[in-house]
Image (cartoon, helix red, strand yellow):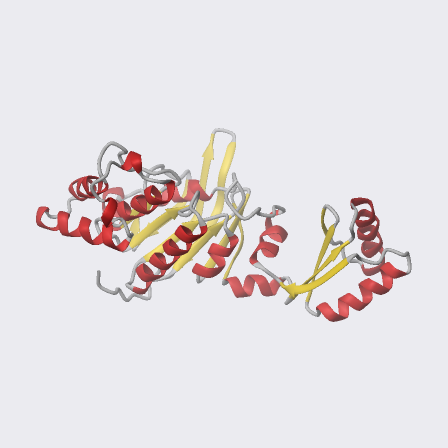
Length: 321
């Protein structure tokens, strides 16, 4: 694959809307994806992530707005768009009764890869995704991680300049997930543009150069991971109160005294701040006045998970739900 250079967005979305009867799945969504980059689309279940992917990959039409892939309108020219993209959805799309090699050759035939290129392309992808030893086994004998890698490999058979990955590491063990991250980085270094949806906040933080956060079908933030985290302040103060009732009392007290409402998760309180050490002194002074001294205290850098919670009202649990 040759490196591609362009200043125009690889993906451009303007005023995108999608309604299913009375359900508004997307509402006036805007974003742009620079070429040769990873763009993360985040949000809780039902936020509209997969709907956006389905529109961009020409599976369903929008009810409002416009979307382009490499300057091509997805509604006006769906056939052209399909020749420009690869898609790996949430569920494996390969045939379990065929071998891995047969699956990739079949995809090559369906995507009109020249006959003389199909076998070499399949062999190259099998090697790249560490599937050579299992290449001639039926896919039904594969583990979940192997199937996921094969599914992504299948999306790459026609060497698409734009790749859509809908929760690509769902169900993978940590080692397989890390390996797939490295493959995504290699693809981008080679010029591929990647749009991925994920609920692994660590995944988006490590891979994406830019992130859009969806909530109830709307974009509530669109920025770099660093800038998103900077919105909350540079540090987060975590207070372990030991028991839920003490945490409830402490949260009410801090809201009253400091005009800042902590996030409460059981007996744990969290407060973002641009100056964690100064906030810590104020918090301890307020709590000690009511004999609510924390059992544990931690001051850490803010994370993308903190941003996600602040923007959507949901905290992830480390994986898709």
